[in-house]
Length: 556
Image (cartoon, rainbow, N blue to C red; front, side, top):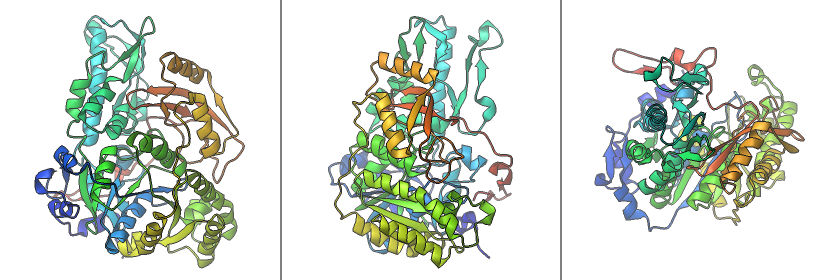
């Protein structure tokens, strides 16, 4: 009988985290323990290693996601385990799972099969409390805003122009639009507001992009919370909130160290949701990993049009990083869905549908090659894939001049990732002309349109009235030079989730543009994307349980 992911994880023999850390040369006094198998690394470790040369940075991304699954996190783990099998000093880094999708649509996010990070239940639930700390710091600022209004409003904040919403790390559509301050004078000033999911919080982005506590406080102080009656911007610094927020985040800023099923060191820290956030693990974790390992493997959220573009244009720019290679994960199943096949009809050979879906992969390959980085395509193999289907994908990859490798890391762990590891080792030694897509000095519209046309394949960009108004305000505040973090559906390269495959000639619609001055970017909200997801008809939470001995079931 085939074991589930959680059964595989629960049957695994874990090494004490001090032994895993020792593989990277981390001393025991450079760890802060969260039980036997989890730890944070200290700032003292960074002071010891900061002058070392960086290892090779490899990004794992994917085709446009489908309900059939692609396996980006699983491939990241499996590639790390494959490199370890070859005797390489390797470290991986993943994003922390969010309780929203874990209890909503996916039941966890720690890899799968024999390529997982463990302890799987801890990672998928409270872990070391980072997301709770981010939620608390964010809502502390919200509380200070409403208290300021209640206590006489000395900054003259216009309650109608408070733009900073609250957050919670759950999918809860009923909280998208709320009214606060009801009940009378003692209960505050009534105003319209709402909740986003925690991972969409600017505080999450700030935590992930800050190099140290000093920078964390500086970025927090720049958060725009609203405007005065006279139109002057009001920041978290104006409310003197940044110090207390940083105090709540001081431990969350330290990267979390765990292990894979094969005991490869793994940082899991921050950053999910590349559709409404920048979707990368923390810069801190990446910096530590590059100094500690010869090969550092990380991932970015959703398809390459979202996570990879943001990794290159935001994270690599801010962190002064140069990736050595990029791996694009695809499955035959998902490509057939992009060719119009229903999820329940994927088991049989269908070369016609596969041919129609392959352009999605080709667009992502073209995009990644456009950044000047060597590309490897990893086909995450399923038992239902036929030889003819696999050969067809290979032919298309060869025609584009990229390596294609069959990956069996789900079923075989590191052993199933050895060939992928070998191709990646070859790729990182190839010529590399890495460059960003756009110059930060371009206007916001020029940056948006460059992403829309070159990465998504849009014909044009339409700006709704609110978006035009937002861009005028951003210009007035002198923030035109900020980077761009697109809010866009993950289900399509376009802004319309119904357009599968490789959409062309479409118009991208920007509804509004949010200012995240502390994070250092603006967020154009496109199509129907929302920053607070809802739950499906049958949430994953309805299948999750715990027995009398504390053993969890129902996580994938």
